[in-house]
Length: 117
Image (tube, rainbow, N blue to C red; front, side, top):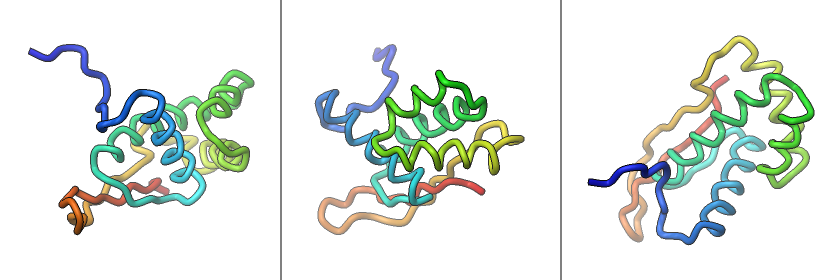
């Protein structure tokens, strides 16, 4: 039995995996939607849901957490603007994953993950 598996390893060592997920999270917040594989999208969804919930209460601690996770300052400012304007009365469900198809080279499942308005 496999117990205690909290996240997918995605075939990467931990620091590289966290860097990839941080990049995808930053891109998702800045652009509003990204195309990626299904496994990566599910991991990014966990991170984005938590950080938007933390950004709802605009405190110094939540800003510091956002700066430590996101790579760009514009992403942090957009995150807090989204949390205040669009998601103030929404309790979770900030992202949507739509299946697109299969990637041509390796037949990986490709999805579109986007922020719900």
